[in-house]
Amino acid sequence: MGKLKFSGSIYFIDFNGEKRFLFRCINYGRKSDELKFIFDYPNSSRAFLHIENDQNYPDDVDIISYGELSYHSDGSLLWKLPNYPEEQCNKYDNPHGSGTRRTPLNKIDEWEPVVLGNIIRYQDCNSIILEDSIVVTENTNIFSGEPFEYYIFLGHLKYQTPPNKKSEEMIFRIENISKTLDMIIWFRKSDYKGFLFNIGTTTAINNNNRVRIAEPRLQINENGSIELDLVILWNTDWNSEIVNETMQLNLAKLLRLPPMTIIAKTYLKTNPYLIQLVKLIGFNRGFAIQPYFRKQKINRLLIGILDKDEKGEFLGIGTGTQDC
Image (cartoon, rainbow, N blue to C red; front, side):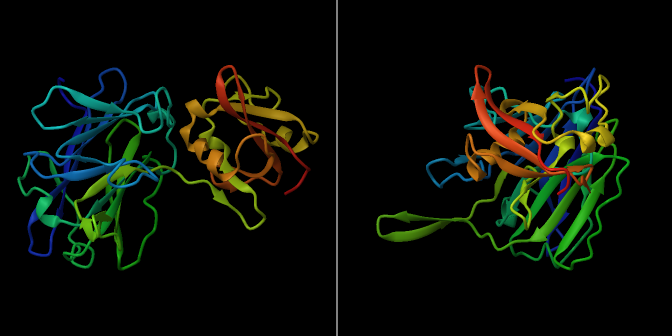
């Protein structure tokens, strides 16, 4: 693999003062940044659960002893899940489907979630200390022996750490994991204590630690409009009236466009965040979009529709009335 651009093994301090492994992050890219997150390492001997959103236990859940998630420069995510640590035959899984892409690493802007982990069994977090160890600030309220969860966020180094003063939450920042990115880990206490399942007439619980993909969630505002930040539409065919050849948004022109003007077309395969719209809305049904740009509200109603063509499923966006 050669010399790493960044390597950090993240540990938390439990209620007995023991340092316990959480995950490892490395930047192994040469010409471009390539990130990898490694779970249950070193000495991969403890089971944990790998799940995808909305999956059912035990049918759709992998019980594994080692897993790593690669976040490539082009935005592709890939899980590598061997059945056993020594096995060469691995399961490779793109959680969003073959060929889909998230935000390219050099396009990540303000704090994008990547991974959600749940820790229930502290004893399964190894206490072997690695040379690249980074120890999270001690917090006996969160790491008290009770379950907690953590989110891994990536964000451009220019952004401040989000404010957080809640006693049951904590944010820990790690700088310079790439040329432009920092990482924050958001910890908080959790009510999740495992998956309930039935064995015959007996109810049991699988309380192994778990890890899954996290991603920005689209919100519906009080008027029933989907809130959509145009920044996430990085791989989109734009109307040249509002986005020029250098991909700069001309907000003034957007506000002046007449109603029912087509402004964008983006395929779900290249932007998996938008797949949420399939469940929320469905195909061939128009819906209102409240647009934002870098979290700033745009005072112009947009209209969206999901459809399909020979290239696949896509979101079409056009102008609505002049004001929201």
